[in-house]
Length: 275
Image 1: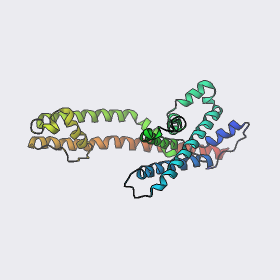
Image 2 (image 1 turned 30 degrees about the horizontal axis):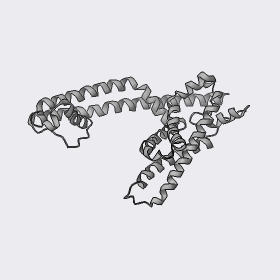
Image 3 (image 1 turned 135 degrees about the vertical axis):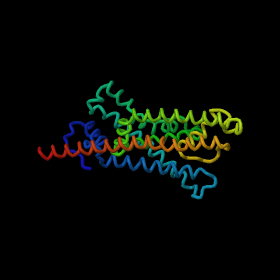
Image 4 (image 1 turned 60 degrees about the horizontal axis):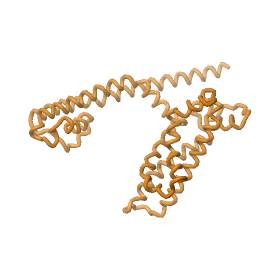
């Protein structure tokens, strides 16, 4: 999407314009490159976990190249964050020391930092012990996925839909938790004596309740008595409602959010045409 043209009085304003496109969801060369790097880093993470296996079917000679690529991406993300932090003063909401602190505590900013900082610190200050921390450092790369929220409108719509439906979702979660406890308690009293290894306590029966109410049904734990199977049937039927309830809430919220954004976009377009 093309950017809205404006005059840049300082280098900081120019950098901020490139890092934060004027149009909502706008993508320029810089933001497009970051999106590509995030996708490449996630693909390389999956490839790296395969190359580290002794029975990998892929040539393990590619491992140094994949690891070097990750080092380069870490440095690019670090430079990007440094430029973003430096130029963020152009945003009136983040001007000054208090504004910068407000910028740093934003969830998307925290995700930006976790996407590169731990690995960067380990590479610079603890190069000899990086291998011991490697699994944990690789897991932190998942925070790079949240960087897409800055540039991909779909992520913003989903986040807004979840915030809109937060109260009914919490209510649905409370109902689900109550049903889980009741289901585990029922099977504990009915099957606790006949199958103590699976239903000997409410805590043990909770595993069966979870897989049954979520309609997963692994089949590793199941009741054997007639009364237990009758109760399990009722619990399984209730599980259909547990899955459908939050799904319906989110679907409704997502549709409403998308409709409002579409109408706002149409109004903005009509206003620009009138001008």
